[in-house]
Length: 208
Image 1 (cartoon, rainbow, N blue to C red):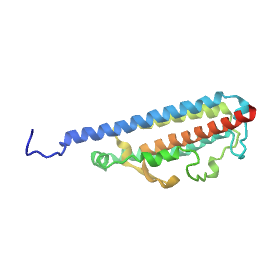
Image 2: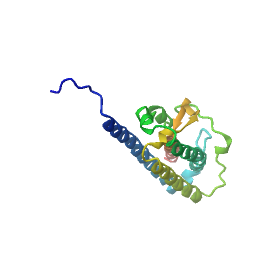
Image 3: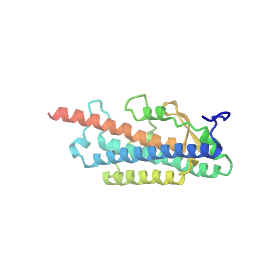
């Protein structure tokens, strides 16, 4: 048994652990993003009657939800791109290892975003679907947006995404970093994928 030694982790090992932790988070975000939008993509191949069905609560059709996801992604990516650029610039102004040491990934709060009707969400008018965009263009847009997110994560592969935060008012999230913003985008998609499943269940019951 070793005596007289502190339990403090040597600097080089602490740095390695911090890097490992952020790599785990990045991998989690990538996996959730790809899996979520792979599921969303399957809705484009569903029967047209189902996709055009207006639910009993007079909410959006599945086609409208798909368009809305693309619209929301578009505006989120503007902020994500800005955050990515700012974070990379901040590499020269902030101590990355110190920021990684103090980093907290707000997984629980962000996961609530993915739960349909978990809280009241007032959407801005410019994110409302218009049904004017062809569905094949919406499908292409969503695939491009996923690749866009993955490219940003690759640019921030060493943890640089923690170096810039943007305020997010949804669900009182407050200031979130670039990784959390991309995870938010994925959770928003998951929220609506769940909504589409509920619409499908309602549609099937009516037809049975």
